Length: 255
Ligand SMILES: NC(=O)c1ccc[n+]([C@@H]2O[C@H](COP(=O)([O-])OP(=O)(O)OC[C@H]3O[C@@H](n4cnc5c(N)ncnc54)[C@H](OP(=O)(O)O)[C@@H]3O)[C@@H](O)[C@H]2O)c1
Image (cartoon, rainbow, N blue to C red; front, side, top):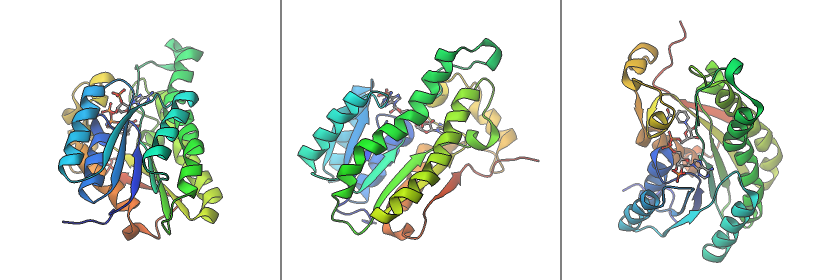
């Protein structure tokens, strides 16, 4: 068994379902201790914790809304009292709350998407830094989950979501610039069409049909396929990968 994350302490936001849940399991399999953050899906978060523990990992769940700084501060206090520090932060929580075009949108719609998908990355990172800086590891890693939407402008009714994800891509590079001096690598992952509850909530419709037309591999990806890449980026196998974006999209068709 590959134990490349042995002994690492990791926080994964939005780890109750989808890509975050698969990442928590992949990290546990590779020997990391994990904090499984969630906002509303407590039962699902507990199932992820159970699976991680069955793999021999130290794992905990913690409810916190990543748009609420007071709740993020409580999350950090919990991590401080359980692990004392962090080696890896995965800023994964996010989503498309509702599809609307610009003409039928309002400021509140815009702000909800920017808050959930971009401001959250700033807030969680800022509040995690004291714990990351306390890590005894020779390198610390932040992986931000952006989206192919940052590049394409998003699907139907996703302009605010896509803009926020574009911000995450840029913020990744800005963070990498500031944090390299603290031996923190910062990388973004750009998933394409991935089968997760995201698409039920976002009412995407026929995900596989869309993938058939849009993806060179002619299929949607799985949460596990994205989690594998995140686990690689978090490990020392990726020690020279920094300030960049890795697309996990099966090959997006632009032509
Ligand atoms: N699926 C795709 O095709 C795709 C493509 C590109 C990028 N992404 C990105 O991948 C990330 C994970 O999405 P997914 O596809 O795995 O969807 P998902 O299954 O819906 O997962 C979203 C996760 O985010 C959590 N979350 C949502 N709002 C939160 C908040 N305010 N505070 C804390 N946690 C919150 C959810 O937790 P609760 O349920 O507990 O609230 C859930 O664990 C997102 O950033 C998404 O934008 C997905």
